[in-house]
Picture (cartoon, rainbow, N blue to C red):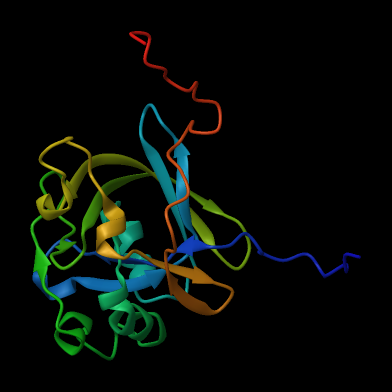
Length: 193
């Protein structure tokens, strides 16, 4: 039997990411977002949804740029802390022992400790209610080369222990089940027998 609940945002798990923004070290900030996702392959586009009262909201609105930094199990404390403390009151990078690095295509910084940083330019801000959606084009991606398999050339984020958010709780990703398309892949046979 299923129970009816009031309408809500129950699509889980979601990535727990740190968004970095600002166009100079004096106004750099980072904050935690889980309302994040992809919307298009070509051009590569994604979104974040942010409450207008957040300290970073006017920074992103004015500069039109931000970076989505994926987080890991080792970054869990910092990820949570940056979600409950305001950049108005704290230097979050200093408090969490994280460092900013240069983006390649925008002025907003990356977070060096993140295994993957997605540089974004805002295309549109869509008011939705409690949150506004920043619809953005991906202009560059910086990935940690230690997660690249030198034999296959494939990038393996699972080695970084990605952090996900599930209804108020943080988890890392579980066991590998299969690669995209594995359910329909034809079995290969040795025809030389």
